[in-house]
Image (tube, helix red, strand yellow):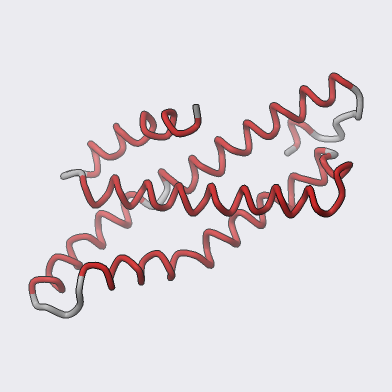
Length: 142
């Protein structure tokens, strides 16, 4: 947010705020997609042992992982949005604009978490996932 701090309200400021929105989209998606990969790979081994012992079904495990990750994801999106939205001067659209921006940040975080789960659950090693992660990220951002 400090790169775009106190952006003026003219045409040049509108272009700068567009850069801010693109930067926020990329940062929110990047942190949500790439950060939890190592933890997901470590949890995958535990899941295989539990699944082999018939502790629970796969869909139950996946739903529990998504639901338990929601509070952290929503808090992360909320914190990033609150700290940077008003500092940049995006508040000319009022409270409705902030809540729309917050909704977009929350949805991007949830989507990034789902993509990281897809990479962690479908690829054999964390090294391959860390190599393919940025390529997948760029595909979705573009």
